[in-house]
Image (cartoon, rainbow over all chains, first blue to last red; front, top):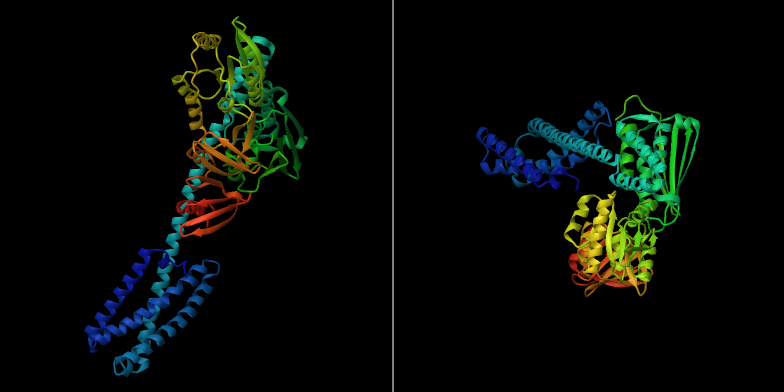
Length: 354
Length: 246
């Protein structure tokens, strides 16, 4: 009862009443000018027929709104034929009896029933068709609007993902702190400083040169992550530890470029930054048939915000995977006993990529 | 001699400060600390004249540290934070070094502090802390002093907050702690999906509610999992209902 457009929207409700008022006036005037009955009888008679019709037509919304496209056209047509027949019989007999009760000697009571019936059925079919068609129109307009809205939303979120991806490529914090480490090393250990400059340059070159839509071999990504972790290792020393266990076929598999990087940044930001104890980042990659499985896990210290679940970085990865592979189940997060683990499931690459 | 501590969680960063300090014979380096906790202990123990302080550190940030130490040394912040956040420090009597920094810039900051120590001018932190607070969006933890100890309260452990004049009593699963802050501050800096101000004097964690009962017309009693009961005003009850999606 509450899911009906004329109850949900005041405008539609009033509109419904106005249209029926108009039909009532039109019918009454025609009948009055072309017929011979007194005005009150014409008006009241029409009022009864129209009101009963208007009220009975309200529930027609439910069969219309619930059977959209599931059935074939023949089935729908058959359904409407059946509904219309029942509807018209009920409408006509109720209205007929009410009018006879009001005017026992009026035109309706005295004219033979067969004569009225044909016109009544004609009116009923017209009315039924108009009501059902307007319901269909309403549903169509609503669907169109909804589709338009979801499209807008999708475009908006695509843009946001793109923007935040571009932003997340190089974290200025990481850059400045690394430069500060280099600045320090130049004073105490020039060789290591030189080494770090080269690593940082390689890392930046790879990061800047990757197009956001590119698909690369996992080995390429891991190579760059190695550089990143080595740079961070100079900053954090023994507090940062990492290990990789990767099968050869996994290393050869394809993966969207820079999709893993935010996971390591998260592990460092929420794990290493927030900890006074060593944090170990473990990476595992293997093939399950032709599907690549990559899991990255790290421990974290109690109270670190890592426990808070999916942040922007993780959401972006999930969004990107969804855009590329049209699948929402490719990112899995496990967070228990102060170990945070993210698993990515990477299907074989398709020819074109979002 | 100016007794100095270097506080930074990154070793190369500490090394650099130590190296640059070799140019200053009047400065004596007492030691280095790699996290905020150790630093608080060390500051309270040694009463240094000057500290080099990183902002981003595990467990206790540079700002949180300043809030809870009793003895306030002169501070030179060292940070890689963007200049936007740091610009406002210019207005205040606090020195900062944006990483990476040059030897000259470092020397300027040290000379400024040396001059200030000689003339016995105090540094004013209150505005800096207020500024840091403004920039904090949602709190991840709260540091409180309880006696001589420092407690770090995880946000999830908070059951409710109660106004106590100029202070706020933080009721947690483990006990209660007093913090010199306003209710408004907590209202703005706790996750608004979890913490609801249900009354002038109360902010509650909606995950800690065990029952809500009508008390009298227009006012409700919220029973919490730790057994405490707090009152909700009619507008507070409305906010609570919205948060619980009732």
